[in-house]
Amino acid sequence: MTSDQNFESGIWETVIPRSRAGSWRLRQVEMSFLQDPSFFGMGMWSIGAGAIGVAALALLLANTDMFLAKPEKAALEYLEDIDLKTLEKDAVTFKAKALWEKNGAVIMAVRRPGCFLCREEATDLSSLKPKLDELGVPLYAVVKEHIKNEVKDFQPYFKGEIFLDENKKFYGPQRRKMMFMGFVRLGVWQNFFRAWNGGFSGNLDGEGFILGGVFVMGPGKQGILLEHREKEFGDKVNLTSVLEAARKIRPQTSASEKQ
Image (cartoon, rainbow, N blue to C red; front, side, top):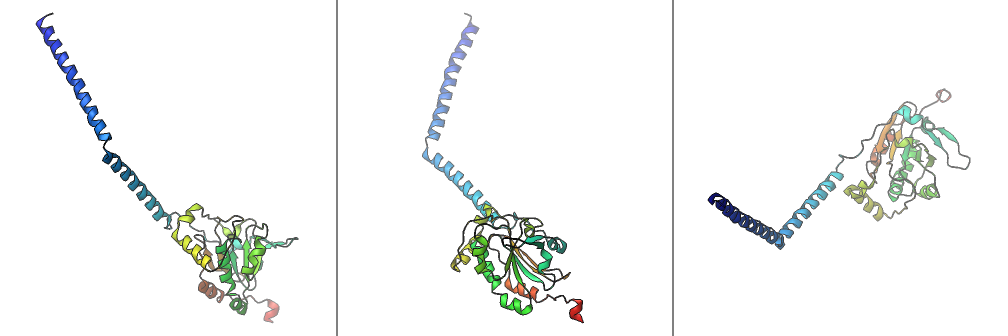
């Protein structure tokens, strides 16, 4: 072996052990770092803080109107052409305009008859019945399904006639739904407690995600005087606004009545 070969061999003998020793020291540092309890504590705290931040942001956004479906205003012609049915065994089908053609009407599109929030609003609207009677304005409700005893059990809360809107047209033109996001909205929980404290109760029968509303209709072509679209569960119409709109109604008079 030459001196050059001896020299190269010495280098490799020196480098390899040092390299291995360095790698061993690096692994020791890594292991000691991983075994440090504060490392895991800091990591878990960071993950927890991040999760809380994301949850808080989601909760904040859910309580804004940013992600709520915007209601589309209904045209008079659209509402007039809706097919409604009476609820007796031999149901009669008629056009919705018959409800308000002569004297106007206040109409509640019920989200779900068994819902205690809907029963609360029905009771509120029914409290206006004496004043509406003085104005000669009838009070009606429409439901989107007729199951079990739901309408019968709803009737004590609502002092007007109820009809079936099988095609859910009063809930359109663009049907809006509130799904489980409704249960993280502060306003919904406030509405729950308000109705609960008012002594209202209900059940879970039937479809309850398609949002309802309230309409005040003028006779003939006087048109839609008030259109309230429920934006969340328990979003009630303002009763003062209902009365103000009802007072604008001008009943139609026939030619024979004019004479």
